[in-house]
Image (cartoon, rainbow, N blue to C red):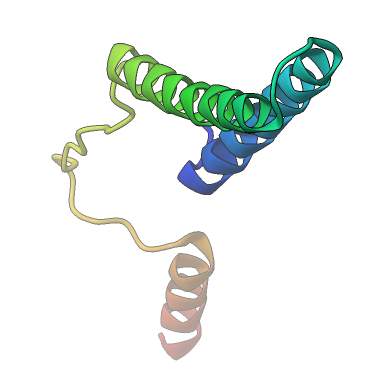
Length: 95
């Protein structure tokens, strides 16, 4: 599965914000100070983004490369079909 770098980054940001929001709701219920809630929420958000980014890199490393080696044909380079037909039809008319 191929996913672009931009799409991967957007997905990681959305996952981080979602996890941070859940953490914020849970911590606001708990009897903690506001500073502890904010710092903990930010740490969860940053950690989620970092772990998601590292996981994307590991998956990219594990996937086989998508580069293909191009082998030149042993026959001469063929023209496209329309050019070939035009050339052969014009050659027949001239004779």
